[in-house]
Structures are given as C-alpha cells and as structure tokens.
Image 1 (cartoon, rainbow, N blue to C red):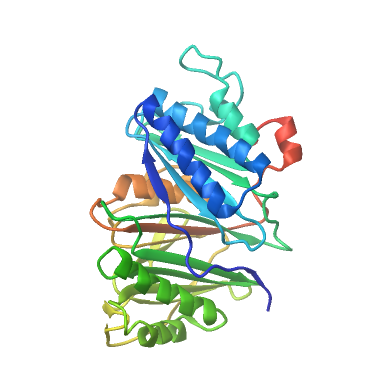
Image 2 (spheres, helix red, strand yellow; image 1 turned 30 degrees about the vertical axis):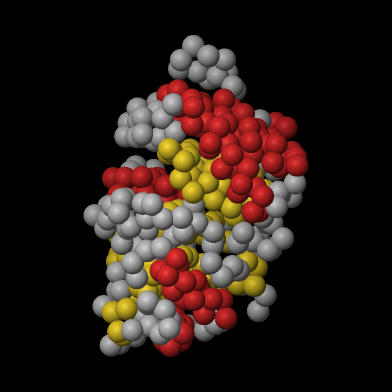
Length: 361
C-alpha cells in the first residue's frame, strides 16, 4: 500500500505576536526561517515574504491581540511548503470574502494588502466574526500536492511550545495511505526537550507501524517509551471504505468527531504511555464523510464547542485549529490542535488561478 505522505514528527508552530508595525519585520524573518527549513526556491520565498508582510501589517494596523503562526509543511514528500496563519481578537471583518479582493479597504488605503495574500499564495482561506479573524495562506515550493484519486484529507495543525521553551513537548503525525489514515497526537510528560523526546519516540513508532491498528500501535509505544519520561497518546485510524474511525488513547489527549454541529467525544483511558498503562482498548465509531476530527493536548481547554462559531466547520482545518488555539489556550503548557476533514478536491490556488485573481475555498 503506497504511503502518500508521512512524517515522523511534524515541525512545531512558531508564534509571532504582532500588535504594532515594529513587529512586522520579525514575523517576516520567521517566515524566511521556515522557508529555509522547507527548502523553498527563490520564487516561492519571494511570494512568501510578501504574504507574511501583508498579513503581519494587516494585524498591526487593524486588529487587537494579533499573532502570526508559522509552520513549515513537510508532511508531503517532494512537496514542501510553509503555512502562515494570522489570528486576532477583533474587531472582525463584516465581508471577509470582499476583504481578500484588491481594492477593498475599511481604512482609506488602497486596499491591496489582503488581495496580495490571495494572489501570492497557492491557497488561502478566511474566517471572521466579531470576536476575531483567522486567515490561512500556504506557499509551496513547486505547487501544492494533488490527490491521486478520490477524496483526500485536509489537515490543519497548530503545535506551540510552553512559555520560555524553545521546543514543543507535544507532537503529531498524520500517515495517509490509499483509503486509510493513521492520526497521532502525543504529549510528552511536562515540557521542554525531555518531553519532546517522548513525543518524538511515539511518532516514530506510529511511522514504523503505520499499517497496524490503533491498539497495537499504542501497546508498542508503551514499550518504546519506557526509557523516556512518558507521554499521553491518542491514535485514530480513519477508514474510507468502511467509514469507521478506530480509536485508542491513554492519558488526557482530547478527541472528538463533529458532524452537523453535534460532537461525539472519543474515549481514552487514564495512564502514561511508557510507565502506567492498565488497559489499552480500541473503540470503533462511525466516520461520516462530512465529519470533522479534532484532537488536542491538554494545553488547550476542553470546554469549546464548534457550533459556537457558525460556518467554521466548513472552512480549512487550519482555521479551525487556529481559532480553537486562540480562544482556548491555557497558556502554561505546550499546546497542540490537530484538525482533519475529508474533501473531494484540493483547495489550492494554482499559478493559473493566481493570474485570474484570488479565490477562497
């Protein structure tokens, strides 16, 4: 079975607060650093610089509590990219789609900023309400990856480190194969480098056992993580043919399937993988084609409801991850939000579409 994308441990997200114009340059340099990790070519780096500058400038001029979250995209072998996710806490944009067109302005300017984001990125999407706005833009080294056939998974993720730490003690991995995907979130005990080692070990086991079921993967993680400080782990297998989600979790990784506003929590057992596991049990759930899977570590509070954000469930998963991270971050630990939903097509804007102008998907 061919693996279409796989990575042992996805790069963490770097968060750049942007509240005044003096912070725009730092955000732009952060985007350049991510481009170097992703090995983008000169043309893509140039487009990325424009997108980062415009998103950060827009935050500085018009938003409250804004931040630019930057992540190298390395999940697709042969198709690296960089994701920029701008989030703020208001005042919101009344007509979000119009704001992405050249010439739109609410402040007396030429209104070219967000239009440039649409033209220079390979894909973009926006969600806004009075409590704030989230904009995601992706720039790829050589065009976005395309699904070989049928429906594919859209993935969005935010993974940030605890305050005063340079490395996140959380990790996540999505291993997508034909008709199937194995999804993992791991939270190393505590935070810092030792927690990161535990999360990396869990992700490595998932990579090696990507064709096995969740319960077996968790059991093997338990053996492999004994030399580490241990981790909370959740593993979900999504099957397109049977439309089932098989799930096994140990510890306080939260997971939910959301369909038509209704949320179904996925069951984990207490314990610490690598140290204290009394029982590994696999649960089977229905996986409707339009369902959204949300998994997150305990750095994010659990008292959220996606139906409190009208229309967000239909947007790009990165927007969902960004909004939940923005509004429910506890602020004292590593925090990961991983969101997946199935789509019939790639939501990218290719070079030929950029010539026509921005599209929102």
